[in-house]
Image (cartoon, rainbow over the protein chains, first blue to last red):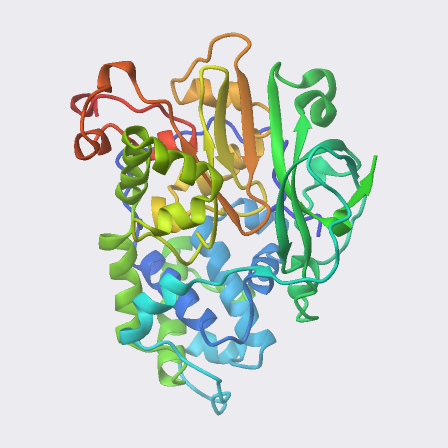
Amino acid sequence: MNGAHDLGGMHGFGPIDPDPNEPLFHAEWERRCFALTLAAGFTGEWNIDASRFAREQMPPAEYLSTGYYEHWLFGLEHLLVQRGMATPDEMTAGTVAVEPKPLARTLKAADVSKVLAKGGPSERETNAPPRFTVGDRVRTRNINPATHTRLPRYARGKVGTVHLQHGAHVFPDRNALFAGEAPQHLYNVRFEGEELWGPDAEPSACTFIDLWEEYLDAA
Amino acid sequence: MSDHHHDHEHSELSDVELRVRALESLLVEKGYVDPAALHSLIDTYETKVGPRNGAKVVARAWTDPAFKQWLLDDATAAIASLGFAGRQGEHMVVVENTPAVHNMVVCTLCSCYPWPVLGLPPSWYKAAPYRARAVMQPKAVLAEFGISLPEGKEVRVWDSTAEIRYLVLPEQPEESKGLSAPELENWVTRDSMVGVGLPHRPEEG
């Protein structure tokens, strides 16, 4: 979706402003929000792509005026309602009004390190041969889906060169909609600065983007 | 879902604190999350996982040419051999800085970052200015981090749009040549592995 999250190439946000003494979490609620999101995600009620799509659905003005863990909180609340795990009234009150949804699994403290070490690999086997190979010239499609995609706006309709083949990976555009993993080949594609930004590009700069086969045509 | 917080008079911060507190109570009461697991998750990222892991990878690569080659050929396996693997680092690629090329990493669409080797990302990495500007004005961004590159040096920006996570292998400072891997770990900064900093003598930082 063409949301406020798709920030590449926007102007007007000012300097980067890093804080060298920044704490890992700025407040206790950030700590809790982080852990709740990971633990709730472990139930398997949603996947990482659905989780990103949920955050992207925060209204644009709100997205740009709030911080990272507020995006996470919005996403978590959104998914809990979407999956029938909680109601908005329950989340406001903080008490149970509707019977809990039976879950396939919950995260136990003893399993945390094992679960984190395993992670969630996205690479999958496929019988489909790759359509492109390293060195091929490709053009990204000009698509504007109202749903989740990982093809950033700044890289649509642009010509680049395949730099790496990553194998087949879960396709986020479909997985985010709970429509299956639909794995397809993933490529890393190099775009020259001028191709992306025209005469406003900085000299000797280029961008490498991971792109699924369905985003690409031969150029 | 977020509308309720416009209805009352709490400040933005206390409002969000109340929302998170209510949510935690609810999820625990429903049996969806285990409070001890929450504690363990927080403890993991506050005390066990962070950029010191990545520094071990870099220092090893600087002192062991065979490891460096493995790292560039199959970063996931090479990094896993040092004990760093898993969530948000399932598929790793290491990109090498050279006299001709400088690499930097961004995630314009969210905040993808290689957790097993760098921990959780700093705020600036997740905030709009860096995500907006890194792809279009990488050299201007680097200048704000105090890095000015020689004219003609290529800047490669890696936008993390998939589940591939990128780690920059910085150039080893000349004056650190000959030091042991444990000594070199202290030269490697988090920012140098994102590509917005350079390794330096530990006394300076």
